[in-house]
Amino acid sequence: MPRLLDEPVPAPVGVPTLLKDVRGLELELVEDAGQRAIWNTLVEAEHPMCAPRFAGRQLRYLVGSEHGYIGAIGFAAAALYLKACDRWMAWSDEQREDYRDHVVGLNRFLIRSMVRIRNLASHTLGKVLRRFPEDFENRYGYVPWVIETFVGPEHRGTCFRAAGFQCVGKTKGRGRHAPGNACTKEKKAVFVYDLGGDWRQELGVPVVEAYPELEVGAGLASDTWAEQEFGGAPLGDKRRSDRLVHSVNMLSRTPGELITANLDADRAGILPFFGESGRERDHAGEDFAAASRSHDRADAYATDGAVHPGWHGHQLQYSSGVRGVGCDRAQSDHIKGKRSAFARYAGGG
Picture (tube, rainbow, N blue to C red):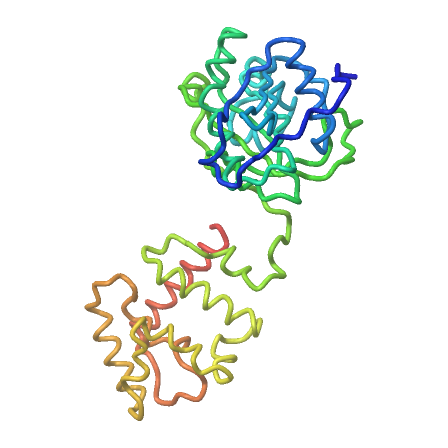
């Protein structure tokens, strides 16, 4: 059991609600037994996971102020194996064994529950991240490369994101001392913070973008699944990406049928296929074949990047109530090529 004080740490007094009004906000590096007892007592009583028995190289900080202690932070050894972090670092098993101590875990972060100050958490993280490398080097003789931490499913990690952390995936729920492959704990989001330096060059590993893994089927039952899957697709123009999301949503309403199958019920759904100007209104009462040729000529010379020449001759443009629309052989071949290209893109080929 960690050494504790005989009494609880006193609650801070007169704490304001605005960050700029906090008097004497500072980080105290825990360096003696008295400070450690304060840190242990505070975390044991007020952190959901209580005070730990830290392993490996470690640093503790108290978040102090003229109002009293308002928080605590603790760094210690990182997880022995963590797939999400290892994938992001792109190092080999041998490199992980050799340089494991260059990744440090942010294992405790506490802002006391009676303290309600907007942006205090991210501000405090920023302060500690700026001084952590020097404090660690002074104590252990080298600067770590990466800090990792975990965020439970009940939180979004907003303060970590604001401080510059990246979410790189989720844990498996095994915990540090789980027997075998047993998943005995809740899955948590994995966040990492790159302290800088040329460690990727030293290891000879590439930069890996931080794209967190989703659970199988995650989001597919929501109304925004098409946006999650296709939003921001690199099609050269945001309006094309928006059209793709719109089209996928329409197709999903009537699986296995043409997109036109659900347009009659919602005539407004056709408008995005006429461009951003709503050109359907410009041809009210006209023969749609003539309107189509007009659109094709305009699109052939379009310079805004939003329209592919030939797309407006395709049957996906119009509901089944529209007559006189067709496309010539050249347009048809052009569109088939586009559809094949999209199929390869959507399928990852």
